[in-house]
Structures are given as structure tokens and as C-alpha cells.
Length: 588
Image (cartoon, rainbow, N blue to C red):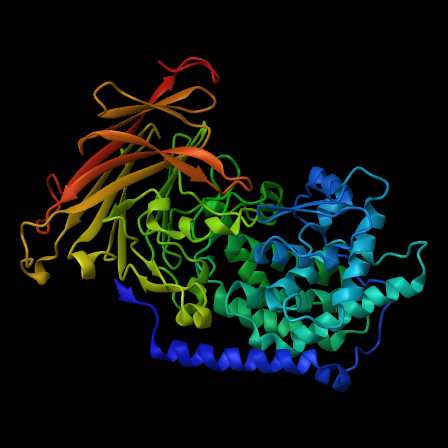
């Protein structure tokens, strides 16, 4: 375990908090609005960015009926009520609402009033919050709103039969928000938020005529953030698969919009796209979605495929991402991904999970082994729980996490929900043979507290039908003898199953039968003792949370030893059995 928070973090966060507070105060009294006019407005878009994300027409119909389903909550707007005057169910709901993430859904609804309602709700927001608001103009919310407005540009900004005065007000609000973003970009939170802010600024400058200075500033900021945040292997510095794909989609949108306007942008953007595309393919599982690590979910499959189609060279998927810290093995229709990297530090860990040595597995029958995952449509009450080690398919010692969050209090209020400790050094290696692929990783997340290191070995056979593994807890020789040789530490090896997988225990509770939706059967076996089937939850596919099952093998580890024998070693295997009845048949 290593400490992730240092004195310099508090100093830096304190200074940044003071700067943000000063900026908010000056904006709230209109100081910057007095010094900086909006400048030349616009009456049309110079370019219209393509929206790669999938709309949800049913959600759009609900919005037209006055029902907003966001962040796992529902807000009903009855006739005569104004949406923007209402109290939202939660801050997470408000963030989604003010970011206009629902706008494409509203526009896509099969209803003649859809476009009109989208414009009406946008105009009401402009009238209520268009000048300034400390919450609604938060950098993350603001950047998402600009991107969502521009991606729905043909509806919001095209020449319609509505009075030009109304459309001009929209343009002025768009420019005012972008100007604020340009002025305050250094105050944005590091990582995905700042990268998204630079994207929004660059895209606004590209889409609006007579905004060359904004475009130049945005592209320069985007180039700077891309250089800092996109790793050499194509991963995002946060280690989140979703963050990397979102960055890829944003960069593709900027590049294509610039090409539409005949504007040449830095080669840094193109090279980043060339790295991001293979990495997105690395994280894509057989069902078309992403592996669920570090705050990411299955993701929008249409958007992912659109992004992957940008790979003109047809890059072959690789097996090891050394900078991002992941291993991938694929054989016989089965894919496994192992998290074998150190958790991000500092502000970048605000969304990180305690997932050291966790695995996911997808077969030709769909996802089999998963992590609980996360999706922004889920209730925020789940967010912290699914960041814990127990929400991942790995070993948990004494019901504690290998990385721990800052506890509620002034420290968390200042620094945010970042990690207080990380698993320390995480080392890994792989060996590819004709018979299959061996992966091995070690992390030190429990060493300081319990004196034990966790080692996981995984083998995927060449036919994809045999996944074997070993989890061991061992005391490093350099640490000497433990103080108390009689103490025993409780541990649990967990494998969370995809919700569609049906599981049943054998009579002796030493194995379990698993059946996937297409009827493919798998047998789980272990030498670690009785197998238990416990309740779990899956959040990566979007709201509402889905009930699922987890396989759990419990044990008690000794405080010494090399982890080469029980009770400090547990061996397990998932072996394919073939078809077991029909896809919807009953199990024996």
C-alpha cells in the first residue's frame, strides 16, 4: 500500500479552491460580464459536428410527457410548471439535467413536437441560467452542455420559422459560455474534465463563424491536454476505458469538423487518434461493449463502432498495454482482461476503483465474469460502493479494499473523492505458449496492514474453453517473521457473474454449473473449500441496477508462507461444457 495524498496535494487543492471561489464571486456579481462583451454574434453555424452517440427515442417520448429519467431518479414536470424552477431529486440528477445529456433523446422522439420542445427547454434554460450560475456553469457540466448543444445544432441553430431574436439569444448564450470556458480553462479539474473543456472550446470555435481566436485557443489547449493525458499505448491517464473512448470520439468529432471547414489542425490530434483506436479495440469485448474498469460501463455500442471504423489501417488487437497497465488474452471466442496496473494518483483518482488484479471474461455466449461497473444513469448512492474491491472479480482480504478512499470530512471536501491509498507497486508478466496464455500479477495493497501480498496467476487455454487461476497470499521474505503467527486473516475470492448467467451449486458445494443465455454451459471448480453463491449487482449496462450472482470462495490465511499451498492458496477453474439444453431451458 502506498499513500496517495501528500501535503503538496492539500496546498495545491487549497490554492485552486480559492481561485475557483474568487472566479465564482466575480462572475456572480457580473464583473467579467462588464469587462468582456460577447463580441460578434452569429446567425448560423459554420459547421455541424456529427453526433456519434445513440439517442434513446423512448426516453425522448418520456421527456415530451414531462418525465425526466436521469441518474437513477425521476422528475415529473406537470403542465404549468417550469422545469428549470423545480427542485431536482439529487445533485447527480441536476448535473445530468444541466449538461443536456438528454437533448438528443428529446430530438429523436417520434413526435412532431420533439424539435419544438427541445428548443423551448433550451430557451427556458437560457432565460434562467444563461447569464451565470455557480452550479450550472461548473466546468464539467458546461463543457458537456456545449458539446450536446453543438451535436444537436441542426435543431437548435438552423434557420427555422421561429423569430430570429430567439435564435440569436441561443447563439449569444453559446458564445458567452464558450468565452467563460476560454477564460477559466486553467481552473477546470485535471483529467477528463479539462480535456472535455478544451474539446468544447475548440469545437465551438470551429462551428461558429468569426471566432478564430476562440478556435485557436481551443485547439492549442486541446493539443496540450492530449499530449499530457493520452498515454503512449493509447490509454487515458485515468486508466478508464470509457474515458479513453470518450476522448477518441471527441477528437474524431473535432478532426472531422475541422476538415469540413478546410482547417488543418495539429498532427498531435491525429497521432492521438491513431493510438486511441487500437486501445479502444483492446477493451472491446465479444458482445461489442467495453470492459468495465475504473468507472466505465459497457458504453454506447454504436458510438464505439463508429469510433473504431476510423481505423483505416485495420490495426491488429494487441495483448499488453504497458502504460495503461492491462493484459488481454483471446482464444477460441473467449477474451479475458486483467487489471495489472497501479491506480492513478492525485485528482485523477477521483473516479478510480480498487480493482487491482480483477478480471473480466467474455465468451462466444456473452459476458461471463464481470465487475459491478458503473454508469452515469445509476443512482449516485451506488457510486462509492462499486469502487470497493469487493465489487470486483478478485481477492478481498478482511473485507477491506486494496485501495481506500478518503473518508468523509474536510479532507474529502477539499480534495474530492480521490484515493487515499493505492495498492502500491503492481507488477505483472505474461507468457504466451502454444497451449495458451499465462498471466501473473502481484499487488501490495494489503502488505502494510496485514503483512501479505496478493499474487494471481491466470491461464487461458488455446481453445478458449479452459480458464484456470490461482490466488495466493504470501509474506515477502524481506519482511521477516510476523509478530503473531497464530492470527488468521479472512479472505474471499469473488467472481461476479453477468446478470444473464444462471448458476447452481453442486451437491457437495465444491463446484457450480453456469449457463449462459445461448445455452453454453461452464463448470466452476475450486480446491479452496465450499463454493457459495451470493447476491451481487450489475450497474455497467445502465439504470436500473440489475440483480446478479457472485461466486465466492472463503478462506483463512496464515500470516506467513510463500502462498504455494493451502490455506493461503486457492486454485479455481472455469471449464466449458458445451450446450446445456436450450437457451431458456431449466438447469438440472
